[in-house]
Image 1 (spheres, helix red, strand yellow):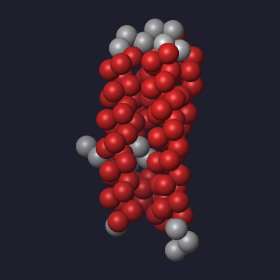
Image 2 (cartoon, one colour):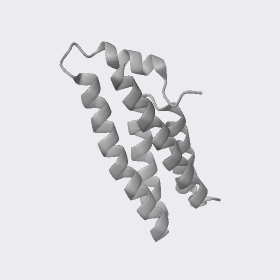
Image 3 (cartoon, helix red, strand yellow):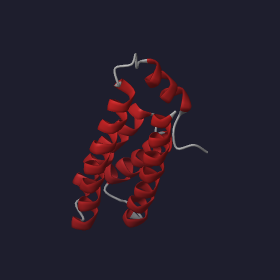
Length: 114
C-alpha cells in the first residue's frame, strides 16, 4: 500500500501551473513535518501527554493536506489516545510514526521526480 493517496497527489499536481506549487507544498510539508516530529519525540521523552497530543494533531493535519493517509491515521490514533490521557505504547507509536514519515518522505520525493 502506498504511503500517499494518489488522488490527493494528482489534485495537488494539477494546481501546479509551472510555478513550482507542488514542489513548494512538498518541501514545506517535509520541513514542517521534521520539526513537528521532533516536538512529538521530545514530548514522548519528557512524558508530556498534552504536548504529545498537540504535536500529533499538528502532524495529522499536515499529513492530511499532503495526502499521507497512513501517517494521518497513525497520528490521529496517537492524538486520540493522548487526549484520553492513556497511550498504551507511546514509544511504539512514535517509532511507527517516524518510520511512516520516512516512507512518506521517499514517496513525495519520487512524486516530485515524476
